[in-house]
Image 1: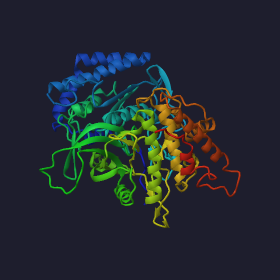
Image 2: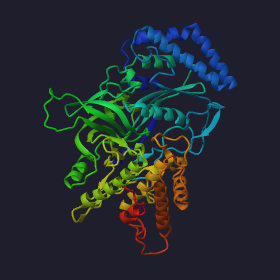
Image 3: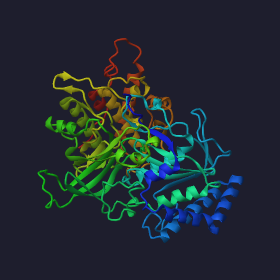
Image 4: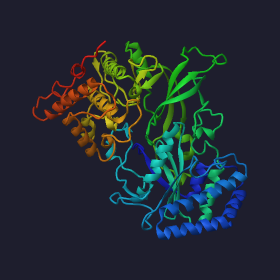
Length: 575
């Protein structure tokens, strides 16, 4: 039986969409009456006429204002009902529903061919949205060869959904409304893609649009995407704050504190890492010994994929210090329990079901890129390369996803690195026995080896030096992408590492290692720059000699890329 698509988007009838996503109280006659009252109101008629005039003149600013006025009327009317929902004092700007209002010079068909670029007029700028794929992936196929079923006119609403999903790290899905010319579509996004309603013309069929918005306005916070596995004192405030959010894992209560890392991917694992504090367990019977301060990692994994719990235990059994310790874990839910299952049978399509896995880990950490001063950062980075090497040599485990969420440092001792996230890791050796795990194109684009980016299907076997190459890119990324306090810099030279066709990403990495010049950075340590330049030469030389000798050692790029050469390129650190 063929495997379901990785990420899918498909169209469903509007009534099916609303029935699947809304949990508004029953009473369709009352809801229809509200919709009709709004439709017949003078304020609605004026806003609609303003909207029609703006369409004729192609005035995007006026289109946005008039559309927002229409939607805000619905929120205000629902507020009068005392629903307690998103309409309570909220508007288009502050609703947990994401809105995207755009306009095309001509009324376009519902679908675009793959070869036809979409020009969306967004804040008076023309932007071509030709290439997108999730930044982190774990598939047997190159990401650029996974077909996208997202209509091109949905690019901007998807981008807003990505922002909403990453804002607090506490959403299971996102609901959106897209106004494209006069056509309105409703959208559902989750970690396996989503679905959207058939377009409805706001000018010709306003009651259908109003009715759909009324139902969503009267829905609960959880229907609009809030994660039900997390307990919130006020679910509506949870879209803006994680204050007092709590969760129970294996019967043990934890208070979630600060988001240490939130993945910006929409489709895929959506990894989120929180610092957390264990609560009073006197009422809960457990034999687990867990420190008071821990981290909790949430990630949406494909159902059926092996859990990484056993790899953490193997690392501990093999005496690999520096890998995060796993205390307990749990599965908290499945995508199949949500709106997808509530679609009518004829509106469903195959998709890859995912489950939300939570792991309680220690010690408490901070991201490597936030470690200060530079000497502590450099020591932490060195220790991470060493921990990774011990994990490979002593436990036979290859990490396969070195990135910003896996490179951490102990909060209490910042010079000590902590290696996290073994979800993509593979066991390549068991004692003296070599194992042959099935290779995949798993990893995170900015840090993925050029071997894997340029390889044809099937992917090549994963090598230790592929992870060393990821460490190399991670060092350059941190120096150029973050300021001295660990805050992202808006302008940096690495945008091409994760945007556009894969061939452009490969070219950008070639340029990076081919010209070992100074990387603009607010970190002042000269030894970091020296180490990076030497690594540039190492990898440039290794890849440059690849095709010159039939007996070339691919495992080490001719002996140039090993743990010893990587660490040997680092200048000595003083006491």
